[in-house]
Amino acid sequence: ICQWLTDRLPPEVSAFKFTSLNLNSNYAAQRHRDGNNFGPSMIKAFGPFTGGELSVFPEDDKSTQLEKLQDKDKVTLNIRDNLAMFNGNSAHEVRDFSGGNRFSIVYFTIGCHAKAEA
Image (cartoon, rainbow, N blue to C red; front, side, top):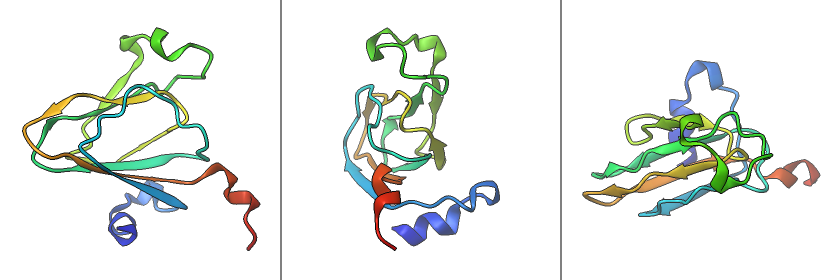
């Protein structure tokens, strides 16, 4: 699973590193902000589903309550057909999906990684 990502990183983000990954099955995350990530995350979804896009709020600075964020400020990413990099510390959510199983992999760095011994 780790090699799958490193083999597919675009040249402009080839230095992307991660300490952790989440494997999700048929999970549509409600709007949230990750609490302990350091740096960007990469995500890709797989399966014969429709919908299930990732919506992100790239300008979210955490000063607005999640439920008060405006839909006009979100960007929707097709992660079934594309690998995407996003800031998990900004608000994001998964749109409803149907038609089949939806699996996703999220690669990220845990915030306390700098405290680990070499």
